[in-house]
Image 1: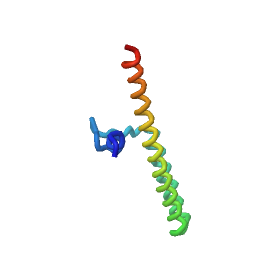
Image 2: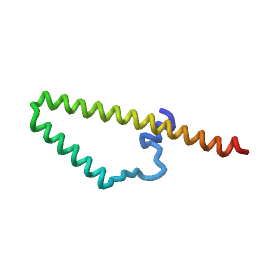
Image 3: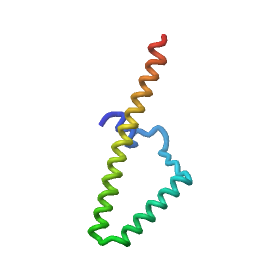
Image 4: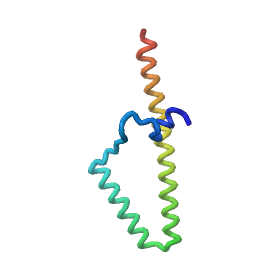
Length: 89
């Protein structure tokens, strides 16, 4: 695992983890929970299992995208620093 991956996954934490739970975040989480409950009540067990699998696969995809964006942003910031401090001497 690379240093960036260790940092991303929380193995290298310079400060405690922070989750910004804004009112908008809370509203969306409540909405998601409400819709999941509605689907669970409406669907048969096998059908709802498909929905659960879809939610899980979507979450995994989102995490992959977040990791890639984090790594890209980190590398981009290093390029900015390099250009600012090394190329301008």
